Image (tube, rainbow, N blue to C red; front, side):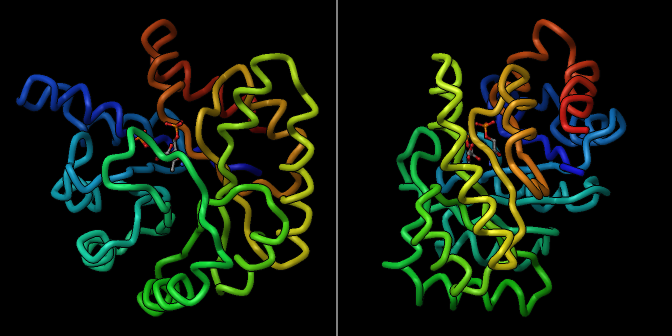
Length: 237
Ligand SMILES: CC(=O)[C@@H](O)[C@H](O)COP(=O)(O)O
Ligand SMILES: NCC(=O)COP(=O)(O)O
């Protein structure tokens, strides 16, 4: 079974655009879980342009499913995650000014840093995941870092799939097979959508969780968020 974790960054973007509290992030998170989603993901960025650090704290009381916090483990982020203690932290090596996440970890170059950070989260009973590309050497190094899971960075798959290149799934399948052999749990995310999620799920063995935000919220403008959550759940069966 693959869990659907809904990334609510875009709800916070909409709220922040007017400075008030519409839409109410906490109500939306609560409703999304009522509609059947098995997790809530947030990615507080250092400039707090969508999710604010206080949102991460407030959501702790609202998320009754899996709570996943993503981000680059700079000091302020580490302190926040250690305070909030979500189910899972996903480490993403994005620059402060990145528009969105645009690369996975070089788990070889950053091995000792990752080991140290992962240990600290795990000592606090927070499951760890590393955002990563499909390079098999990097997957091997991820296993050596001690992380519980990896999150496959799916932007390349999504853009190739849109062009009709279904072969683009192969490195993801190979990476998932190796990761599973090495004892790693497998998550995936970035640009997954109603169009590509079934094909992705069908080709990735042992896919534990997908986190989906941008497309899901855009699709909800036309189809309604309850309906869209259920369409994803159906495709992930
Ligand atoms: C880690 C990842 O894949 C991203 O999709 C990210 O969580 C989205 O962040 P933004 O909403 O800031 O683009
Ligand atoms: N980890 C990926 C995520 O949370 C959502 O990514 P996207 O669907 O907004 O591209």
